Amino acid sequence: MAIAVRSVLVVCALWLLGASSVDEELVLPPANWPQCPPPPAHCTPLDTHIHNNKYTFEVEGNKFHLIYDTKLSKLEVFCYDRPILESDSLPRFRDDVSLSTLVSHQCPAPRGSYSSVLSRFNIAALYSLKLKLGRRKQPRSPLLPEHFVGLNISDLEIFGSYRRPIYPEDGFFESLDGVKNLDLFGISLSPLPLSNQLRSVSATSGESNGEWGGCEHLEKLMLAHWKWSQQGAPIRWLANCLRLRQLELQSAKIQVILDNGFTVPSSVRSVVITRCNTGTLSIPPNFLADASNLTHLDVSANNMSKLASGVLSRVAATLVSLVLDSNPLGDLCKSSLDANVTDSGEPLSSLDILFRINHANFNKKA
Image (spheres, rainbow, N blue to C red):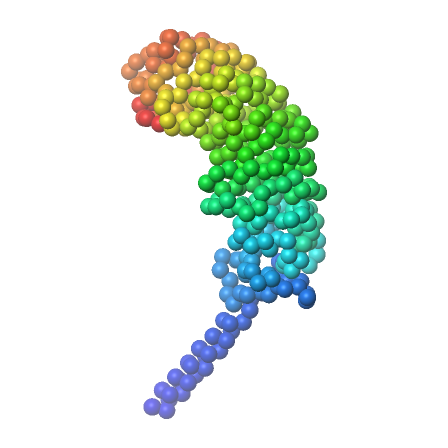
């Protein structure tokens, strides 16, 4: 009996040793993933097990992670503030590939262009580039015009720092004349070149340095927690945006923008002004003076108790949808809508084709 027990223990011990040795073997990425280039490249795979489909390499003494989603055609790379994108030892696809998206996490900007980075990965064509430079601290490398030379993409997202905006050099957008969708976080935006093809811009926690610039093709603009280097938005800030259809402003400093005399361009059909978290928002009557095509107005969550006289009459002939949620306008089920919404008794019945008034939570403070 004792001999049998010892035999079982020996077998178990050998099995555990074998399993341990298997666990220590390197797990290489699939063949269609980026691989280390041959010597003399300084690139070594490090994984003995895979977590969340993330592969680890050592590139010139620095750890480097990547995730490749073949279904979405999306490659994510993680540099951890090391200048790895400049290395000729980067893992790369064996053959030229076309990708939908490349996401760069905490990778300092290269000395040359991002187009050279794509070449190192053997990425022949790319639709969307997302640069997550480092939200918790200021990135080491500024954004320069030469970083985007030769880059042929449609979508560009740049996520900067929480602490203060990143100030790219003037003209950094000059070579990105093919970009149609721009998403910015924590970035100062200089006047855009007249030749740009932007259709949609979403910008958060940044700053405009002067006029907007070229916006011939711009159709959608969303600004959240945005500020201007001067007192507020210039009066004719978007006057040249003749194709603008959607305008959304979210900020505690919206009032400064409105009080500076800025007016909505006539091409705009949808305006959203929301989450003015300090004080009570007051919309000047002239804000919609030129908005002759407006069909949707959302002024929810602004701590408003009234709408200024004349605001709604400007858009009476076109407005279809009015959203007033989360403003202390009183209980409209017990009192006159006109008396609560406007400070002059301006009748909402004058809105000839208004189909929907969203007035949930009127008594709720923003």
